[in-house]
Length: 115
Length: 113
Image (cartoon, each protein chain N blue to C red):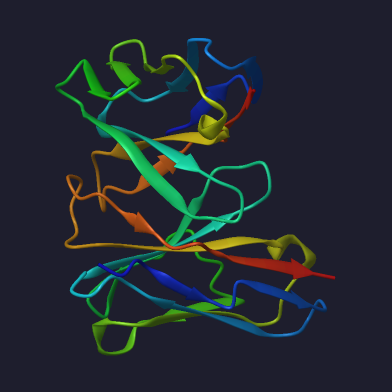
């Protein structure tokens, strides 16, 4: 079974530029998550999708971050404009369904450096 | 607000040693607690999941315990190996809303050959 795919793996941009990350979850997984992991910290949930609807985006900085999940499969996370403090690893995860009993499967992450 | 703390932040041990990683959380109203492993440049891999009604879970050389009333969990690694070197994260799942994970800051483990 193929795992969660993310691209790019690394990205370096100047502050105020825009950047987009892509995630392809495990086939058939209805729930998709985007996390931000700043160096030395644990991952923080940014947004959770159930199929193509948003379930939780309470910690997403909506003035600069946006995410979509078209057709309930792939997802993109965008930052526009980027700030220095956005430097982090952005992790995508998926699970078969929503709910507390479901294990999340994580992708390798995209490492972003904002200069 | 749930907060998760992991001690120590880093640990270096000789191969073969048994070791304990600690995780504490401030709100005992959790659905479950999960231990993950994170290798450099890679995503998280689930190691053990303990439901709130359980006291411990075991997988091979790993044993995780949960004391919900005191807000603590430990991950015990027996006979450590260099391949165990990684960052270990614990995460609690909240009982309200969307059951989101709240992660600790991790313990970076290095096992010396």
